[in-house]
Image (cartoon, rainbow, N blue to C red; front, side):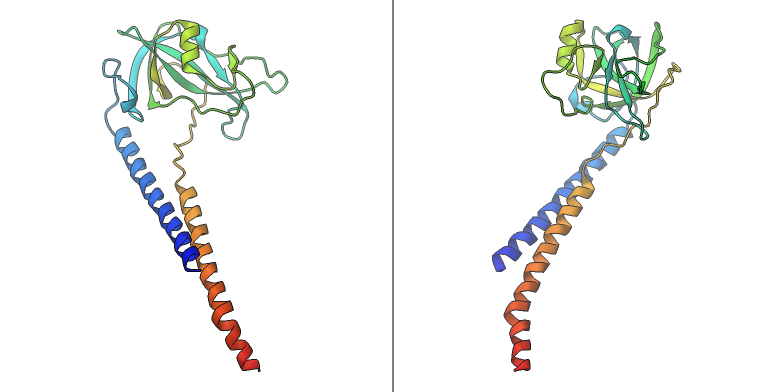
Length: 224
């Protein structure tokens, strides 16, 4: 009983500690997002994750990838990802431009999308690669894909891609894309839920011990 109660209580405390770590991480993300946006010249590597950006460049529209099975606002559709050739640099960065609905009658039909040919300004925040979905077999290489492998796309396109992507929140082009991006989920409530379960199990162990070892024998003695 003592071992079980101590173990479950310790696991509950551990989950609360994990939640505090996630709170600290969220505070760090918020602090990064509050800093001034990065420009083309300041753009670096993965240490700048979650920073805001204001970038200029030209879309590599012919390399646009449509990520399938990405819902937004309860509707099925695509995430549109296009490389942006950065002005003044020989590199490009993948931009998660927004969401567009899918044709329910023809899954392979691509929606019309306005992509300016000239230089554009893109505002957003730096993020890791787009979220991955479960996929059977090898990843597709066409315009419509379940997941996006940045290294494979770089090899296909010949572009020198930076290790981060931009989640676009603003731009000068009226492309009609939705950008109701979900906030980054760090799983904070999950840790609180697990902590509650472990503490509840600890309380149950203690209650059963008291019941069977003390209360039940005492009730029997009174009845006899």
